[in-house]
Length: 443
Image (cartoon, rainbow, N blue to C red):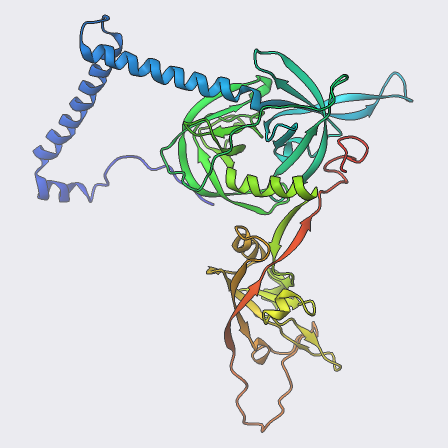
């Protein structure tokens, strides 16, 4: 996507219009008045803070407000310190001194969120995907730190979410942890004050402050699928913050810090967090089943260049619909090859849940906010084989069965109601999570 930086200068063709409406002197005077008002406001604010104690009531009030704000931020940090953990990941390599032994090699660091009192930690999938071992440092009340080995409970690469289970230390019967207080991301608004806590560059429990800069953003997950409804913030997020908390002014979790937009690799004031509501759905599924699920139509589709090669410019073509599936019961039709080798083109999905569909990614995005069992409206074009010529691929228009001058059947646009099915999201093993069965340990 192309971007451009625009200056705050009015184009030359706009300036005459301003002069005609208000007069050049009025425009200049308004600008000067605005500048002076800003300087006066800053001076008053400085005086209220820096003035001698008791000089004015405004001075005492301003200083008291700042002290109250300072205490509030400190309390948010202290209360959430035990709920933010430091994650160190390792891979195993053969020792150069003894070829019969393996050694731990540091792989990276990240952050994590204590989800419950039973030692479950939530982090980004990309923090642990290349690791064979993970050690999690928990800071207890009073500042004492304990380092735990961790086992992978499950993950969803499509949402960049992973859940770890802390393993009891010697002498412990169970791990007890202090969970974060989970809020809701549904009522967020741009300009809302937020706090990020994580471990950037290995500096544990670093607090930064900012605002919600944007809502409804989108980014790609490690599986290259879109993550939607992402929160944008200008709170400083750097490498190592992944998996850390984004908190509201009440100290409640509203997002998990995940990514930044930067040309240098460090914070440029554009950070992204997975919303708490999205996070909660994934974590509950992983904790209950060991796997995450996503809502699907339960069909095979053809999209992109292959579909365009058939002369179909938009939508996704339904290839197969399993018999007696929810998609079949909803009326979706797949493509069928007859005894002669000709193929009757199936439905082409052009709209789903009110969103235009031009690719498989569009279809995935349209279903992203839904759960299995939801019913969605699917708009399809049916009868496209009537306008497609025979091709070398074996796809062909149906043979005419009536008079030679008979008009071919018209293309139908149909609205269907389809109940969504559930599919388990596997955790990739080879080359991504190492061998979790032998290390982080999938159950």
